[in-house]
Length: 247
Image (cartoon, rainbow, N blue to C red; front, side, top):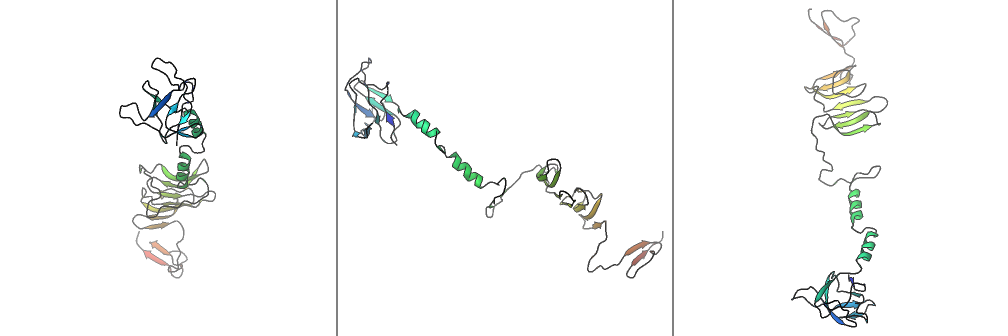
């Protein structure tokens, strides 16, 4: 990319006292140092190659393009080398600002969004053999990592201690998994899920015992009933079991 120099009211060929030098010839250099390199790969405003500068009849330096990639250069019209800055900076800045993606941030953002969880719909491909999402939590069991809500009530939710409570809207179908605060592994309620055994219809405790509020049936259980006490059960049926003990 070649930058445009000269062609403005402040680029003139002058003496050390500021006198203009009409039709003067000047050279272009890579710096103001003594070991600077003369730059001869120049192009005039019409696209013609040139190796030196020529001031016009008023001593002004016409616009020209410097070597490819050179942003700063020094010119010398016989009174020493003076730095010259590009004169198309404002134009280039406008083109840059008005560009569709001047800094590449839009492309980067789109690429990041493609790997993010969509707000609605879409599919996320989890990376192979890697954790897709890791959440660091305090483990106090109070806050939630995930929850469904209607704006007022929280339903199904994953607590930050790993407990998982399933609550559906409408007809209750509630279940608490992995909650050991009450000594329970699985606790089911007819109402809102809770780790407490109080009001549960089915509980699996940490010691392996199972408590059910209703009848437990199974193919290997049949219709047998178990009683205990000092007196036999009323209306006994075939298959009933009575464990007698004295009061």
